[in-house]
Amino acid sequence: MNYNELIESFNSKRAEEIFEELYGEGEIETARCRYSMFLKSMLKDFPQTELPEASCPIRVFSAPGRTELGGNHTDHNLGKVLAASIQMDSAAIVQVRKDNTVFFRSTGYPDVKVKLTDSSGAYNLQPKPEETGKTESLVRGIAAEFIRRGYSVGGFSANADSTVLPGSGLSSSAAVETLLCRIFDSLYNDGNLSPLKIAQISQIAENVYFGKPCGLMDQTACASGGAVAIDFAQADSPAVRQIGFNLAAAGYSLCVVNTGGSHADLTPDYAAIPAEMRMIASFFGKSVLRELDKETVLSNAAELRKVSGDRALLRALHFFDENTRVDAMAFFLTEMEKGKTGSLFNYLDLVNESGDSSWELLQNIYSPKSPESQGITVSLALTRDFFRRQKIKGAYRVHGGGFAGTIQVYLPVDAIEAYRTYIETIFGSGSVTVLHIRPAGAVELVF
Image 1: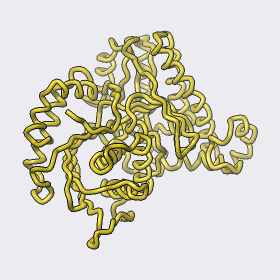
Image 2 (image 1 turned 30 degrees about the horizontal axis):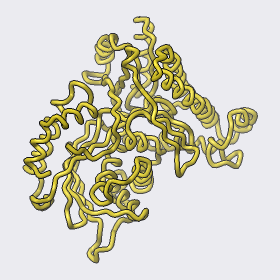
Image 3 (image 1 turned 90 degrees about the vertical axis):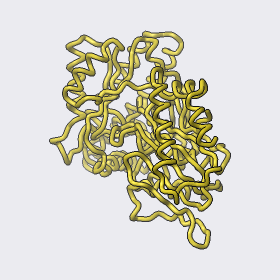
Image 4 (image 1 turned 60 degrees about the horizontal axis):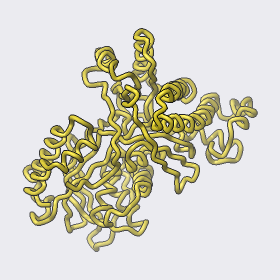
């Protein structure tokens, strides 16, 4: 569509259906205003040198953040995970450009400009140390992996906006990565890449170019959409299965509490978890814990304490228990879809077990180098106290990578406002967000 056609389409019945599906009931007008705003600002505020010719069609893309439902820090050792895409997303208005340059502007961030080719026209996509930790590295890394896999890439200009707050534990980085992948895919490869391929390309860009070690869970959830059970036993081809997730039928909601704090200096803490788990595996001549079982590790616990240390052993025990728990959680979610609402409480019990295991064994509640800063710990303790005093049957756990960011809370719909009032007096207005599980992953939106 051209500019006028797209602006008009945002007011269509089709747009209402798309916005409600992505963002939830009651959010249609907010979404319409948001997309209209950054379409208008692209044409008004972009440098003229970064805008393609007026006849070039304008296209729209969206990639969601994600919430981890179960399987805390298991993916990097080829474990099992439950995750779901959410209503918070990275969205972009995009036009093709013919000079093999990507210009990417995102609200609140410095402009990104990456020339994909050198002066001879050859692709220039090697990692650049000065781009480590920057969005430029993701653009370059994703383009490089597209080329390596035999796909096409080219230039585009994009005006983007993200509602996935950085440091919130809702995978703002994976949302941007899968957004960029889907743009390259739709503009230059007919939009034929599967969600899994989008996820794999995104992970490689984050690992190799951006410089952050991560598993494949975040990108898979963002790319796939809906709630998914993921088994990473086959590293090159994990099994991804859609599962139902309908808390509303039982009168419950899922929310997250943003406790503040930055993830910026936490990479060593994140990296230590897979490294210590693999240290335990290497004692037995294995590369990852998925190749072992809990009994084998326990029978060698005395020696492992000497060789690997206590924290590594505890984190390995978390892995085995959490891996088993994911299967049970998926089972009870499936039972809920069949109308067996009593299964909700079995599921919530497992959520609490997962949270306790992360707290006690995995130990990703706060950074050991900053024990004075424990927002996650405080929020968990206050939530537990609230549930006890209000006699609420619910669940709570650290969310995602941990150390800073968010916790996840399940509670009855009629208790949300009381909980919000209580928690936001400590963590600030807007710190509690009710999540909507959106069915669409990283997609091009066709109005």
